[in-house]
Length: 174
Image (tube, rainbow, N blue to C red):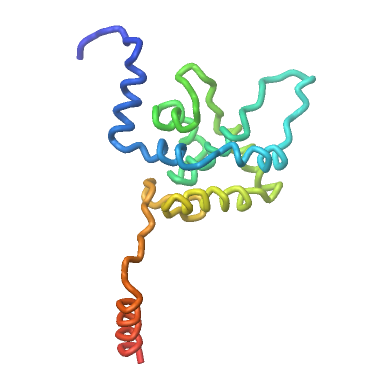
């Protein structure tokens, strides 16, 4: 391996390579307007009083996207924290740079528990699934089959062909 200093465009070049290979998270980010979830997220998880000091809370939409990553990849909180730090595709999906803070496992757990307590998880994942479906992709309750977006099958049979298929199935079953 050649020892060299990283170039100014190396990071962008690596992201371009990921895009060329078909980054499913990049596609999800392009298909879904995540800001539409902000009002529901802020209602379910109110901000703490900042007058007492402490570290600023992570953005609600960022944390929701973290939960989406977990659902898509079936990850534990600890593994999610590690992979966000490790994977450029995860960082890009979340809008994080290399120098940005990453939510730790406890923060992820706390945010999810607050959404559960507010009974908001289903109400948030339903519009997410609908947004993907409206773009022709198949989502299943916040989980995407094999961690990839799958184009929903389109029925191309004519009405006559559908009737023939239905009649032949009915004949076999009866």
